[in-house]
Length: 462
Ligand SMILES: *[C@@H]1O[C@H](CO)[C@@H](O)[C@H](O)[C@H]1NC(C)=O
Ligand SMILES: *[C@@H]1O[C@H](CO)[C@@H](O)[C@H](O)[C@H]1NC(C)=O
Ligand SMILES: *[C@@H]1O[C@H](CO)[C@@H](O)[C@H](O)[C@H]1NC(C)=O
Ligand SMILES: *[C@@H]1O[C@H](CO)[C@@H](O)[C@H](O)[C@H]1NC(C)=O
Ligand SMILES: *[C@@H]1O[C@H](CO)[C@@H](O)[C@H](O)[C@H]1NC(C)=O
Ligand SMILES: *[C@@H]1O[C@H](CO)[C@@H](O)[C@H](O)[C@H]1NC(C)=O
Ligand SMILES: *[C@@H]1O[C@H](CO)[C@@H](O)[C@H](O)[C@H]1NC(C)=O
Ligand SMILES: *[C@@H]1O[C@H](CO)[C@@H](O)[C@H](O)[C@H]1NC(C)=O
Image (cartoon, rainbow, N blue to C red; front, side):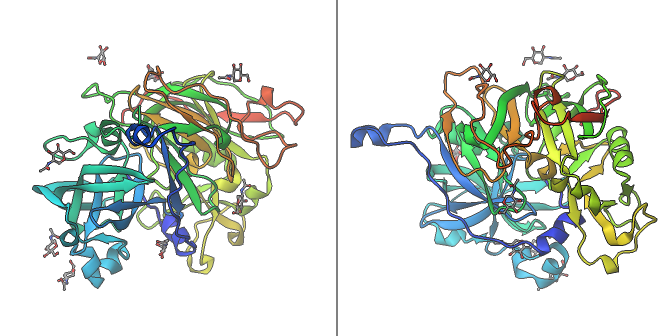
């Protein structure tokens, strides 16, 4: 699933991009060659390009390899490419409507290309874009992990601008006849010992994040990694998406006093393919009230933005705190600077009445949605997330943005789940209380405090 808001598209227009190459961070090789060749590469890492509209990985497909830039999406499972002949990339009218097209794949130039299901590939995303074409098998290489054969889609018709790398559950592939998705293939072909990966999106301003298959990197987070069970799909009673219980959301800064509450849970999807965060009105009404935000997304004539005062970013202690799985579960803080964005071209906007000067109008990275509850990149950038499809868990810890060191722990095949590892990285601002620490743990710092705990109401179904 992915949603690209007007905000994201506007941001994209100002993005600068750097091409990156995959980084192999495998530890020192084994003793002799034959053994090395047989030895499982238990983890490998792939750099992600941050283009603000989302996170992209460069993947080699076919023989000889064609490098394709793919959007990494935890909210879907199909891996697919745009055919060289896809309508979007060959029709300017379509590009005017859906945006310019990215890397395409030329099937006729790959000697290992094998058609599998003609017209079998069709996918539709939550934002209304979609693609259709065939399924095929070919080799795929990501971050140095070379899969001999993998079933993928090739689109001849697409309203989606780029190739997709779905890293969800195989149960979620879109085909009539199910087949193993990427993470299952990595396990089947001996590349990883357990179906797990870690996603570190990094700072909005930085060019790259990483996806680490088969392991986790303790230098990229603080505190303890805490696991949460995934919530099974109601109708099928199978776990097929990264949905967890969000138990409270608080707006906090150092001046406010604590108010406590112990509300029911809201099932939220952790979705790297979604740019913003979407929460039910019961939560957003309180966040918006606290931030004096004006919601201009509810009508057709609206701008699609939630306006807030840019000056809120001047309060370095202002943050949103997301608590999962009850009081002892993971707590992730998202600083205001990562939630509040400049609006390009303010002169062109027909603002509603705002409680602050329009010259100070910014856009908030959280919107209301009463059906699909999604924590997208405006949440995920603050979290280090380990996705475990073997044990149906995710684990979260507070991300360290711009971390440069690396200390990779493999998730063992025999493990019972994601290890409760402690972060070893350090934040740059070392005398301030690290964001994300519970108030009681923020020793020496001014007592951080919750303004309001917001999640309430009944359990809602996605
Ligand atoms: C990043 O996004 C912008 C806007 O969509 C696009 O113009 C630019 O080419 C992208 N950069 C890369 C390397 O794809
Ligand atoms: C698919 O694309 C082809 C051209 O590549 C076009 O002729 C056809 O109308 C498109 N189909 C749909 C359903 O848009
Ligand atoms: C391009 O797409 C538009 C809109 O679907 C269609 O009307 C037009 O015929 C297409 N042009 C070509 C050359 O295929
Ligand atoms: C394509 O690959 C899948 C595994 O991903 C395999 O089950 C299937 O037999 C292959 N099909 C062909 C035609 O090679
Ligand atoms: C991370 O680095 C970027 C520049 O690459 C900088 O703009 C940003 O403020 C840094 N973030 C943190 C949390 O230090
Ligand atoms: C999520 O929260 C609901 C309501 O509190 C609870 O019934 C359910 O067991 C929780 N699910 C998981 C997987 O923690
Ligand atoms: C759902 O599946 C689990 C095992 O995966 C089982 O324990 C549980 O009873 C099932 N629930 C329903 C309602 O069938
Ligand atoms: C992580 O740190 C906590 C104390 O902060 C400690 O109790 C726990 O044993 C540590 N866990 C590991 C795996 O080292």
